[in-house]
Image (cartoon, rainbow, N blue to C red; front, side, top):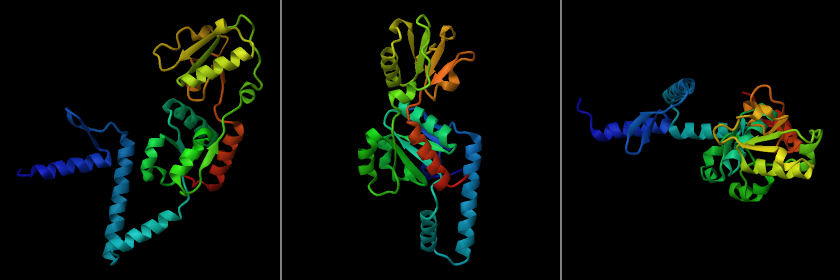
Length: 258
């Protein structure tokens, strides 16, 4: 077949734009490792959009008419998910887990650098921790609501917790280094023996070794499901209960249902 190389290259670029293939420097073009259900869903959506354009163009509407109508329709659609803005990837994952559990709606986490792409907030309500609120608000300017989250206080995290026996081993597990540091400070301040504390960085292979010998495990919302069975665990949340309630109420009132 006499197909021009530019035609082939353009076809691959379009497939890459759609996420079907990916370019790997020095290696070539590979099929993207995406979930088949996602691909099927995107294909069905593309087909429906194509049929919509075919039908409306046949009825005499111009592309300009369609663009205006679509933009108008999108502008009045309610948001359908949250976007959590946080520069630290490990903390971001924890926050997404906490918000997902509290609201039962879709939550996507992004870094502050990703805000340069305005499309990341399409159909979304942005969330941010108080410490980054001012800079994010300045970046977003007047692009709708920005919900500010507050961190749980030491008293809130320790509320209802019983002090373990003096000789009890306590394990602390997280992928976020600051969680481990904060836990150390809180537990030492509560009078626990530093020698009885076992800190486990969950990014390190084998972090769970010997953890069943601990009287209980303190962990975050992300790692809670990965603690070995049989271990008593206490989950310390990062987000204040008041903020979790606020965004849960917001989701119930204003976010579109799937």
